[in-house]
Image (cartoon, rainbow, N blue to C red; front, side, top):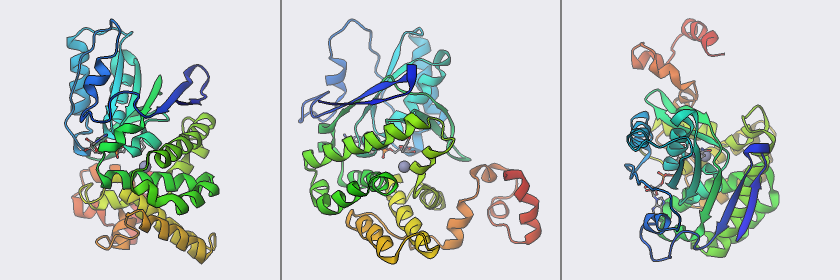
Length: 329
Ligand SMILES: NC(=O)c1ccc[n+]([C@@H]2O[C@H](COP(=O)([O-])OP(=O)(O)OC[C@H]3O[C@@H](n4cnc5c(N)ncnc54)[C@H](O)[C@@H]3O)[C@@H](O)[C@H]2O)c1
Ligand SMILES: [Zn+2]
């Protein structure tokens, strides 16, 4: 078993990575194996509705209601078994219940194993924007069972690869080269190749979070490709593209912009585009115009103002722009 540490003083925690940590490879769902672990603790299961659309305050309230109804004290712990949606929401419920109880991340998607389970960003979406309501709350433990990826749909696996490509670009040229050489193994779900990228991704994220837990500076590197990516997700109402797919397109758009600004050579930008494309991710989004991307990069709470939606979304005159700008500085 691989063990890494996220070093955050008294809030440090281990990431355990291995195949078969929580269940058998033939287990279609991993919950029975997890709850059957020995011990005298009382375990209550809460099955959450599936999908990004349910990463809401209402779903978090359901979890909190169960905790209250069962009179759990501050010594309880929540276990987030699932993808990034379950991890973000459970972590948020743990941050809120009695002003903060412990929680463990047991990520079961590639995206959650390489990214969302580590680092303590928890939260839910609001109609006004993605992840608008949340808290920094570090897990006490991350348990990554790589065997859970055996049941993950191929499209979800590819989405997770976008975040891995991101780590190569922000911090590890050797990882980027390794991905170019071994991408086919990853796409075929080869356990050794997956274990390698999960470990390396967690190392990179743990180091960055350890230096900048609350994104005062360096942690923003982890948002590479996300300015474009979030705009694509928002412009398509979170329905057309998975988060990782939007990030794939965002990485290639960021590379193209870097080339235009003279910060990357044409060859380098093309290497990024080609790797994203080979990973089966979009490199451009034909259905979203550049103007729409720009518009959706604006702060999301603008969409919640009482202005008529069309007017709030498309400032047409210089006057309007001037009127708005100071509010969002
Ligand atoms: N907190 C962070 O730092 C952070 C970082 C990146 C992304 N995120 C968040 O993560 C979310 C996306 O996470 P995701 O990509 O894991 O999506 P997800 O949680 O929606 O999971 C994707 C799908 O895979 C299914 N699934 C999960 N594990 C499975 C398995 N082992 N076998 C078969 N099916 C399985 C889920 O039921 C779901 O239908 C977004 O809400 C995003 O905002 C958070
Ligand atoms: Zn992301």
